[in-house]
Picture 1 (spheres, one colour):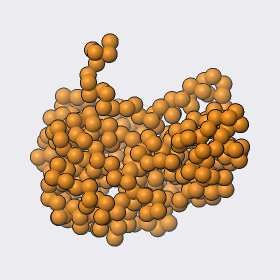
Picture 2 (spheres, helix red, strand yellow):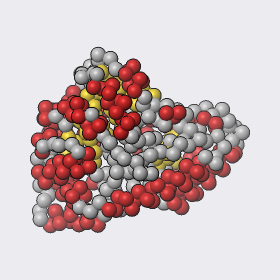
Picture 3 (cartoon, helix red, strand yellow):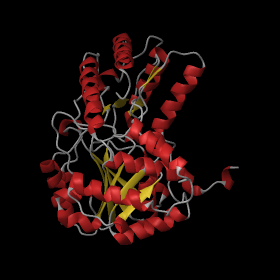
Picture 4 (cartoon, one colour):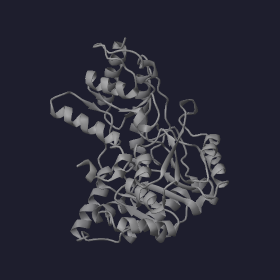
Length: 401
């Protein structure tokens, strides 16, 4: 059977975040008391007006195929959003809607990468970036964004990574997994580097744009540096801020030539995004936005609580992130210690596995995000779950010898 499968599969790993979520689900089915902190999705329900828009669309019979890149109404809502929130002007012909953010990235890479093309990806990174690049035949170039820099890529490190073979720079702020968010001045240092290299395109993943705290002001690369507009694909979606992970709607805007190429890929793969979800997304982008700030109040409280409790754990150090709903604590102080049964913790993956086995807390190990020794916790769950989970992590760390 192995020889029957495509060689390209050897370049790709299964999603670690999905694997952790599935493992937690399986253990619960076996009767284990497991707290899952691996899933990157809000625990709030989709707002009622958005759900009603989907119901209304069904009642109107909006259940047929749509244009491959989305309905006109949604494209206009996306153009309005980019103008309103980011000061970016796009026409509908520059807009692309996909069944989730991941297909946007996949279609862009498939449409542009040739063997030998390099894609710069700061680490820690969202787990799918390098694998999508690999699957498209490109070469991921991983550049470390260090904890001492707040997990933010430094301009000199970006400059050093660029070669004549560089085709893309994938940028994510606020970051999954670290929650790090770049201020306008921090982002300007990176865009100044990119302006000097006109062969490098930018894919900016702004999925967590609205999930920021402490009066942080979000900015996106083409907004900060207009010279990058013609070679930037600005990506976003309704999954996180609008609590619509299962609705599967991602979108982007960029140069028409690129959008046409991505359309060709999508026309032969997924075809159009779900019609009903598109109408729900129209309401999400055009409708009331006040609930986002209300949700962020809860997320900020949870962030502050989790950071404080984790920093009370022996061997754990946790920075306070600016956005998203993740923390990315270091477990360096636990490496080299042993569990009560004598198992030596020799990596962040071993730490996460031992924590799950001993205390029933599911986290994602840092190696999956390209930077060790860390682990990711999603605080998009209840205060009760977070309080109990942190108490278990404290107990686990205290038990290591």
